[in-house]
Image 1 (cartoon, rainbow, N blue to C red):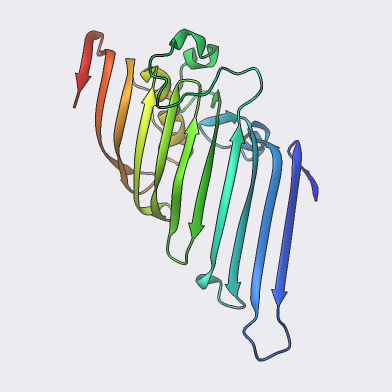
Image 2 (image 1 turned 45 degrees about the horizontal axis):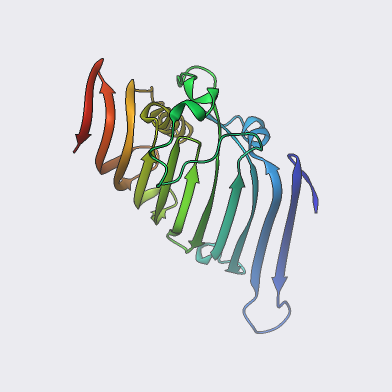
Length: 233
């Protein structure tokens, strides 16, 4: 165990059995505890996003010696939002007051400007197969946006990830999406929008150039400098 961005990390590598006729297996077990996600994102100069929270989790990989292409594994990570931040959004909280989510949400995002800082929490669990990552029901949330998702991806390609978004501030949600799209390599500007509601859909193709098919319903919607009120589509 060693210090790692404010927390601890433990990496264990094992090859066994050796010197026998039995197929040897390699195991790489990586565990982190209370890692400062903001400090880590700054250290790797991650484009677009500066999430604030503490991460704890484990990633376990196994493969036959000399056959890494046959690797399998599992992983689970949990992120806890910083103390003092507003309560995280849930699908049942779309009636909450958006003025209580914190000043971070009012900061504009531009892919050529500073990375966007925001408190975040949630959990992600997955199974790794040679060709796919299968994502178990997972969740990420800020004080204004909750994203529930699961599905599969060929390591960022050929993705099929159903999702549900609940928001009390579509502008914050759009800034969050634009920042993450920029982090995945596609510079994306924010879109001026207001309101709250739900967005249910599926993300297809690649992380860097996704195709989104979705249905939304919302209230208090404002876009293109026009108040639309209730809307769905």
